[in-house]
Image (cartoon, rainbow, N blue to C red; front, side, top):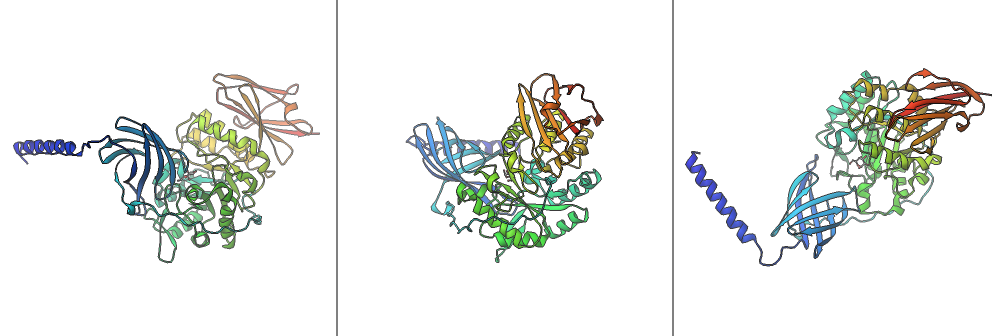
Length: 503
Ligand code: GLA
């Protein structure tokens, strides 16, 4: 195109745009009231996800619902001129939508994407799901697995929706070469977005990112590791992929046939159908299905710690249950999760663990000091140690944290006790009784400056006198004098000891 033609064309385009804008301007005030639909993500299994809004506008206030293929949220927001903001509160992880009314079109910003919503037709509406009957409650037998907290790796914290077969294979290799496997990190877990679609017989396959799940399981097993996978009791997962709703036994059989050893079952899309009072029966359904396969499969319940899951998780066949919302890679989030884990100590024991979510150690949002504290807190609270970083690329400092065998030994202690904390100003002291009669102690400095930490034998609940004491991060023996051990601890750092006793 020469310059003159180009200039004429762009002038024509501007004129057309101005004309279009002119015609689109409605005579009456623009409103959000009504039903709107926007194309959203195309999922990795080829399904098209869309955002469906059903809104009411009362002056500046917006209420209504927002629905995707897997979630129905309550929507609340405000309008200022032609701009508006809506938050999706109940129905899933909180989300925000920002937009602008442009006549009969809405220009939206949602989850980092620019979307255009148009007036919806009845065909755009998502059909409602039928509520299937639930089994009567019972106590499922103990599956005998993970008598010490599960250890492994999960794809979500680092890779989110980007996980692939190649990444999982490389991670398997790295688990071996880095020494992670030999330190006990055995379960290599694929999180959400591996799912394909169901075939005409209802069998769920994987999507193109995972061309052959059985072959991948074989590869993972050949490295001396075990394979974890992810699903939901709802029709859709948190990332809106197909869940196991109505296909519990069929999916459990598929997972077993692939050679899966661990299932994380994530509530999310189940909210479309069930209330919190249904949760135990819903989780029991998959618990029974897994046990019926005859394959030993660790059952990880992920319901963000609601509906008193700690009181029924093990009855439903669960080996671990989330006690919190999703962790993020910040000190604040890590601390919020451990605070929610703390009061649940009495519910933990061999084969049944409180899970404050996967580790963020090595993902870059905290300092190495804070990651050391994160690791210590997860270890001492008998939390599952599921690494969430890129095992292929670890700095020496991160390796040292994740591979600290003395700290891991505290976590893997066969007594299976979860430590409880005591606060004294900005110092927080956790004590965990261990099988050999010794105790693990972690003192965290929550303050913003260095603190003098004094550990008193009288606070440790030991049966006798101190016979040994070891600093688990310094890898050095230390001595108590006159019933105390004192050390300076930097801000957000931790002192972690193992203290033995004899009569
Ligand atoms: C939820 C879970 C996360 C992760 C995502 C995947 O948010 O809590 O751990 O599994 O879903 O979509």
